[in-house]
Every structure is written in C-alpha cells, then in structure tokens.
Length: 277
Image 1 (cartoon, rainbow, N blue to C red):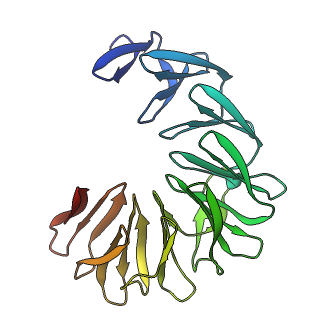
Image 2 (image 1 turned 90 degrees about the horizontal axis):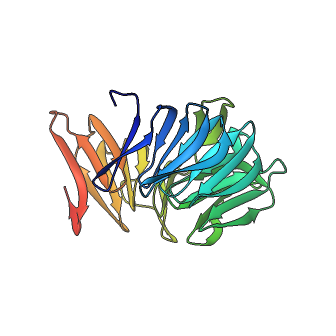
C-alpha cells in the first residue's frame, strides 16, 4: 500500500501480512507465498502469516494445494505448512500440477507425490513427467506412454506422441508434446490423429485428423482439424464440432474454451450444469 506494507485480502477481510514489504510473492487460490525483506519464506493463509524457516529459495511455484521451492538443486514441497523434501533434482526432472507432482531422480526412477504420499511409479523412465491438475504422464525406457490418475498407473499408448516440443529455462530440453488438464491427457499419435485418455478410458475422437493447437482443461480437449478446417471439442466423453471454420483465436483454461470466428465474433464454451456455446 502507500506505506509500503504488503496487504492480503482474504475472505472479505484486509490483512497486513508484512509491515516492511516483500521482495517476491506468488499467489495461489488457497494461500499467498512470499519472501520478506530478509529473504525468509512465509505462507499467508487463514488470516495469519507462517514463517517456513527457508531463506532465499532460488525458485517458487505455487499451485492450488502446495508450494514447490528450490534451494540450489534441492527441491522441496510445502503442503498444509509441512515440508517434504524430494531431493536433488534439475528442472528437467519435475512436473507440477494443482494437486500432484511427478519427478525423476538421477537414476531415472519415476516418483509421484499425491494425497500426501510419495510413490515410485517406474524404475527406468526415458523422458521426464508432464503434469495436469491431477494427472501425470511420462515415457518409459521402451518409449511407451504411461499415466498416473486416481491412484493408479499404467500404459496408455505403446507409441510416443508424434511431436517434440522445446522447454526453455535454466536447463532447456526437448520433450514430447502432450496436452494435460484435469482427468485428461491428449496428444497427436504417430498416425496424425488425436488420442485422449480421460478418466481411465481411451478415445480416438471424430475430426481428430491432423490436429493443431491441441489444448486441455477440466475434462475438456479442444483442437483445430487442419484436414477439415473446423474446430472440435471433446467434453466428458463426447465430441462435437463447435465451429465450421478455423478460428482466429483459441484458448482453454479449466472449464472454459474461448475462441473467435473469422468475422471477429468472440465466443465461449462453458459448463453450468450442462454445456453451452
């Protein structure tokens, strides 16, 4: 505020979290994580600030349910004000969702942290994990796609996705491109068609040939069919065409898809009891 204090608004009330301001902060739907002027990590939640006894972390990543932080190459997690240490990892070896984290150790072993517990998933993984809100996927050493969802893991495809993407950062690397959301994993397979893992079931939807701008949200997958030049949407196990042309704008987040037609009209797909466009 005008006095240099760090203010937090929570549940209709205004709080002074720090009287002398902060050097960094990250916002989550359930809390605020910040570094005070001395560089000490705090979590503000339920009307109070809790010091975490961590000084000058190199990186903060706030998700809905927990906070990931890094001190040198040591990666740790805070959930409900309790710390969990993952060990010494690099950027290439960890993926974070709202309620799930997956990571590989330097031996190539794959682990998942979910519902307060750590579980080893794979002895040898070739490519590190990708995380959605509550799902995890990776490639094993046979280049098969594996997934973790609802406490279970298994093979979802015997072949890797078709495309490789580049992730910049302190340790840039190549990874296979997939779209992940809540309960949902989508990718373009080796035959140039969309494949979807959704709530434990596999789908190969109509209109999925030569997809572009493949994206995922909460039980939603959206893509442009370059073959038909149309916009398709998969929602809760069903597929529909929502635009009979290629949109000029397209994005997806949680339960909302927004797009614009060639005339510039802005439209949205959303869910309130049932689906609407």
